[in-house]
Structures are given as C-alpha cells and as structure tokens.
Image 1 (cartoon, rainbow, N blue to C red):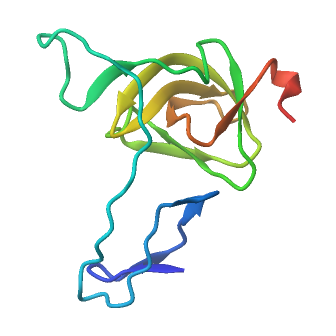
Image 2 (image 1 turned 120 degrees about the horizontal axis):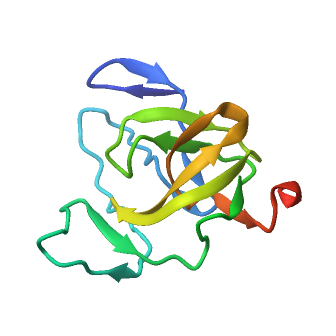
Length: 142
C-alpha cells in the first residue's frame, strides 16, 4: 500500500519490473528522496523543426511493427492513454492480455509508444512497449 504524503491519497501501485525500480523507498516523507531515473537509450529520427513537437519524436523500434500482435507480460499491467505520454488515462490491460499494434512508434517521455487495440475490451489507445512481448499470431499469444 502506498500513500502520497502531500495529498493523503492511498492505493496500490506497481513498484517496478524485473531489475527496474519505478518507486523509490523514502523513509522520511518530509524530505525529498534523491535518485536519478535511468532511461534506456532510444533510437530517434529527427523531424524538421517546423513539424517537431516538444514532447514527441518519431522513432524506430526493432521490437514491434504495425499489424503485429503482442501480449502483456506476466505480472505486468499495461496502461492505455489517449495519446503518447501526456494523454488521458483510458484504462488498464491485465497480464497475459493480447493486443494488436495499429500505429506507431512514437517516442515521448523517454519511452517508445504504440497505438494498440484490445479487441476483448473494445479499447484503443497508446501504450509503451516496455512490458509487451511480440507474438507471431493472436493464437500464439499464450
């Protein structure tokens, strides 16, 4: 259980994935914790400054392509947003769920984002590729 000291908000959150730590223990809530978030490198393709957005860059990914199926990794939760990084929260997709890549990639906020469709939930939105694994066909996502 996590509590946000400044708001008193309480709830559950994912602490990390494998060796990656997203939530940093901070024993004294009155003192800011100091730790720099390490983001893995991403291959960026620059766009002309007239069309470039400050929060988004086009990018390449060797993990997925449009039309592929993917599966949310075990013990992970996939966050679906209306647009990469800054979009409103549309929903969550549970572990081992199958999704289809329909657009992307887009790099924003230090992550590679794909527009995905989750047919079983009638949900379409943007998600990071971090907690997904590729499948050759929807039936092979087991």
